[in-house]
Image (cartoon, rainbow, N blue to C red; front, side, top):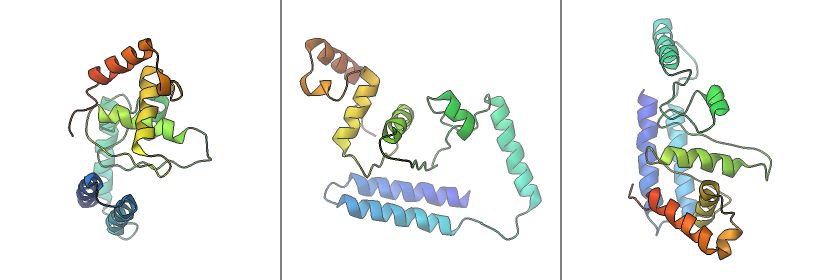
Length: 174
């Protein structure tokens, strides 16, 4: 639990830094990497581990999964098949998705991140897209208005966008 607490504290520091608009985003990403790496140094990767501690933690985890329909994470993803693989996502957990270009990594993670954001604040980092492009992807996923169509929306599309924007409380402070 100490490592998890350290990681959560690091995430708060990084989030605070990310909100400072006068800080270079490259510096923020570097600091985030350093903060996570510092937390990982304390993770027990070998040595003595008391069997009773592991057995107790495993018992609790499996009990939670049984009570929650196989999902032990506090945040199930919006994708049931992915939940079966990940068992949901625990608070403070960092997900890193890698793969070939143009296979939908950003779309997948935006879908998951936006679902999580409905329940709790969080952060989304992309090395490929700026924040406006990311939000346009979310709008496309949530409203069905493609990013191309967002450039010149019809009255009907604008109403659908406006209704979604108002209903989702997108502008609520974190």
